[in-house]
Amino acid sequence: MNSQISESEFDNLIKDADTDLGMLASEKPPVGTVQLPQQDLSFFGKIPVNVTLEVASTEIPLKDLMEVDANSVIALDKLAGDPLDVKVNGALFAKAEVVVVNGNYGLRIVELSGASLNDLTS
Image (tube, rainbow, N blue to C red; front, side, top):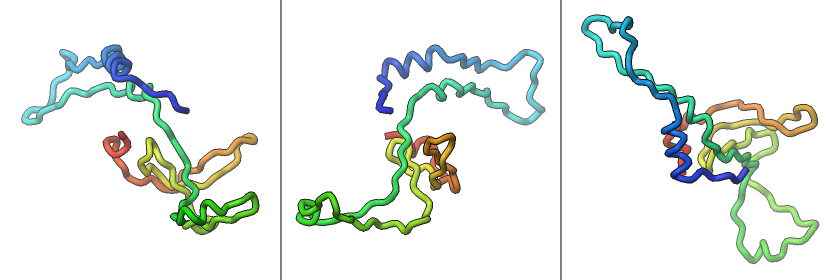
């Protein structure tokens, strides 16, 4: 999935969203409290993001990479059975394990990274 959203398309999504911030006349906040208007953020659900699964990585000298052939093995930095990194737009989002669902690969999330929405933007 390599679809990108342009700045003007993003602006149109925001303009098209129903963001009625006013309170209904019958709703009154309790005395002594300030009630902030509630925003409908469902329009964010239309923004495409790139989700990737990173198995492992390693750093090797270019000389070693140039000697790789069809039977070469490159050792990676993660042990077999360790949870894999799920990244959203390149930022760590969760740890997961691979599962098979109806003949397709899938991900079972085992731990969320706690990254905020701001951390996931690039």
